[in-house]
Length: 231
Image (cartoon, rainbow, N blue to C red):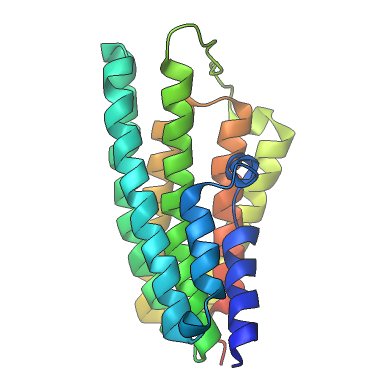
């Protein structure tokens, strides 16, 4: 694959896959994103390995940003709220680990350099998105900031939420059918981890936040369903 094609694909993956809450942050030109774009555009990083390295460096940068935001958030929270966030964070970390195994299982069924880039992007995006969520939580928790959260009703009472869950289950079934039988338990474990994370995160978000969590899962399962088994 030509270097220019690799760069275009990498930029499309990284800039086109963010959920709604994260997209709002793109305009802010975060230094981590800016550095990644610069790296991806360098002639000496135009190989597949170079492009993957650029995204991995960005992932590490966002992991550091995530950790910093998490440390900043803790002292801003009252004890009960802190406990909710700790549960949410622990479940997100379990989901990240389960999804890493799922990605490995799906991309093991593919061939071609473009899928190396896609896998690197799908490892980067969840870390970036979580860092942005935690940064937003820090800003909201500071004195004088109005609370955006409210008690949510059941997803079945929200047409948009229910439709998103329907789409998610549809892509889940499609992905399961395309995976080798031996890999299907990996998908089951990852989806259970996601459900645990959704339940832990729901008390901390408003309707848009819940929809963003579900929408990101829909996008991920759709992408994996379209990827599994490709040459």
